[in-house]
Length: 225
Image 1: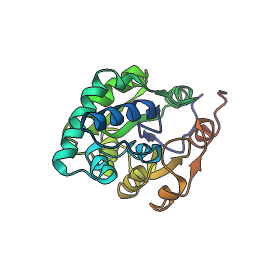
Image 2 (image 1 turned 180 degrees about the horizontal axis):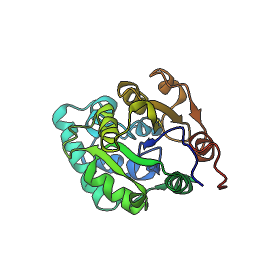
Image 3 (image 1 turned 90 degrees about the horizontal axis):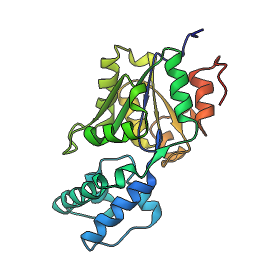
């Protein structure tokens, strides 16, 4: 029996929320920088590449010019599409959570700053795509990568008021986007961002894993992991 859900539509970030994408991102950033004879940053800096638009990351985390960053993005995508894209998996219990939400009538969306064609490949690879009602991603040139606008596209497609939806994410980009889309937000602490950065954007609710997330999204669910 379907229960009354606290949120009609649930919008997920991709990298760091649904997908454990760090291995693939680290590989692609490292190899792109090697091609450009640029120094490889430490792991803490590499983690910052997960979530924001790539061009932004190369400029702010590697000190590149716009022209260099554009070249870095081109190298990254070449490496990514030739194998790196498959170097990821879903976080524990995410598939069960998505299936349970779907069975109880929730509308499921993804809002990602990753270019839409690449995001579709990842979602197909992870077998998440069939469970989604909508996916909003950036253009290949990273235009339309503003998270708030991507969230709004999902809300519009699902005909859902912002107050009846929730954004699930792991970084300040996600919390910032939810705030400016006037929708609810739950921060996941198993991803690549931090509680502190999300709190700076007004986040107040956090979970440690997908089991805790289900207890909020499906409070009366009898399904066990």
